[in-house]
Amino acid sequence: MTAIDGNAAGKRDLVQPNPDVADKLWMIVVRTFAIVVVATAAALIYLVIEPTTSTVRPELVLSLFTSATGFLAGLFVPAPQKKEGRQ
Image 1 (spheres, one colour):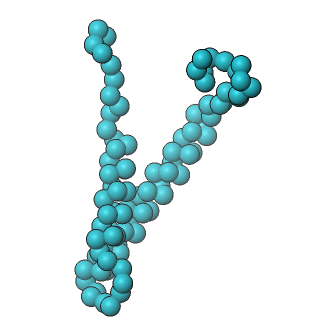
Image 2 (cartoon, helix red, strand yellow):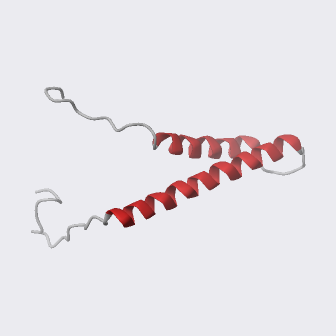
Image 3 (spheres, one colour):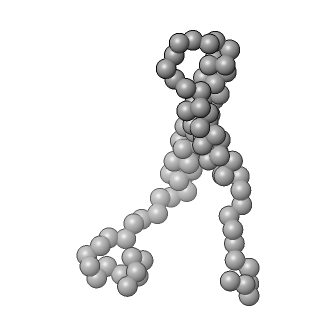
């Protein structure tokens, strides 16, 4: 038995949000990651230009920047699809 085909164990099926709600949720996620990318880019520039005695290591900020950038880039990659006759 799968989670999709029945409620024998008393489980509830999840209801898919309507397209308007899904679009709003995606926009929240994308905007949040865009803010993270801009903020970390600004922090990296500041850390390079203004050498301070800060305990923040630029490598940590760079990893956050590359992670957020990778997430945003992943949104533009087409989903892999199976072609007819191939597995």
